[in-house]
Image 1 (cartoon, rainbow, N blue to C red):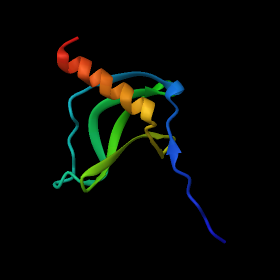
Image 2 (spheres, rainbow, N blue to C red):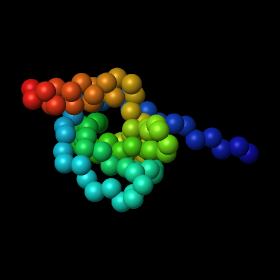
Image 3 (cartoon, rainbow, N blue to C red):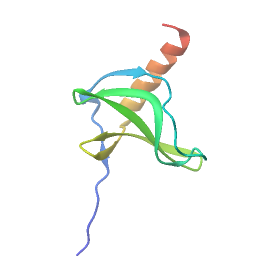
Image 4 (cartoon, rainbow, N blue to C red):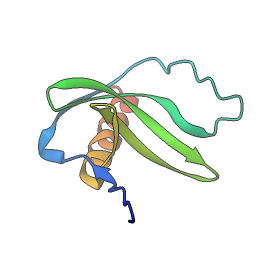
Length: 92
């Protein structure tokens, strides 16, 4: 019997807001790992959730934890965070 694990993704329709916080302490001395905290919080599914990065090498994958499972950010949600961050950096 073969067991497959589906990759869970966020649904942009369940995303309400984003905020930037102080960057939490990262326990990884190298900056690589499976649960690197970012400065972003996402209101997703009615709760504020920390955005984490799964970072190995030059590329990473952003995700939030929902009911103990990793939900990788869909493209629209990633753009939503990026636009929010750019506006915040401009001081708006």
